[in-house]
Length: 158
Image (cartoon, rainbow, N blue to C red):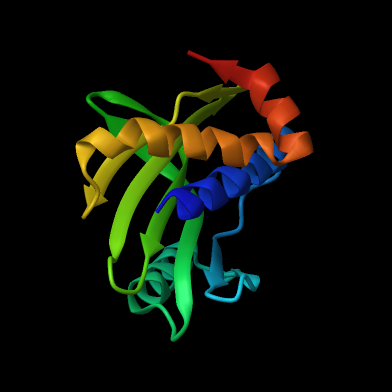
């Protein structure tokens, strides 16, 4: 799961670059197989709801030989009464020890982009004691995206 979460961090950093440039995020499904081959598919249907449904279906089904996949999309959140926009990341590992987690990176577009601390919203087959290590892995993935790490750092709001 750690490699999958790093992958999600890298994707989230790319999403922050997109938001910083005042563009919307196209739902994307990214994946890696056992040989280290990576791929990415933009789900650019006209109806964003259909794109999210298709991405979730593909993520749940996986494909033969995949080690992990990340589905990323933009949407609205409601966390304990706080409402706003977020980048959502659904992360899944496949194989003998399948696991999943669902994350959100809240953000606000005002005169300047503000990015808030990522939140783990749900986990499957991931122990709570592993969440700090996974969180570190997520930030490691962000750091590997040069432009995204710079913008993330400048935009981060606690």
